[in-house]
Image (cartoon, rainbow, N blue to C red; front, side, top):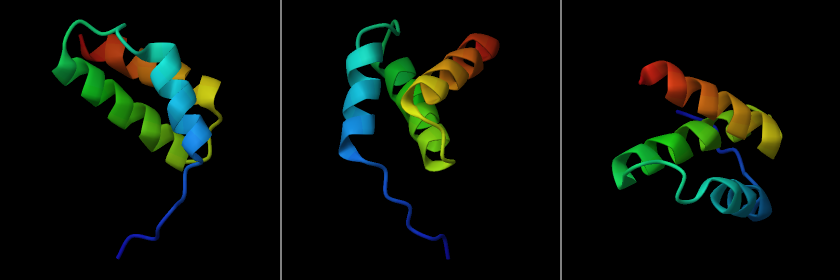
Length: 61
């Protein structure tokens, strides 16, 4: 069973505000958001999560 980890709503809002509309399609946007949330869950701050998700996204292209 996976433990629950709470991510503050303001972190999620910040990720959405900073990255909304940047990806070319909805599928990429959702994948990117999922990666960002994964990094937030690991304890990264918003900027770190965005940076790492961006690197992951670019490497997957």
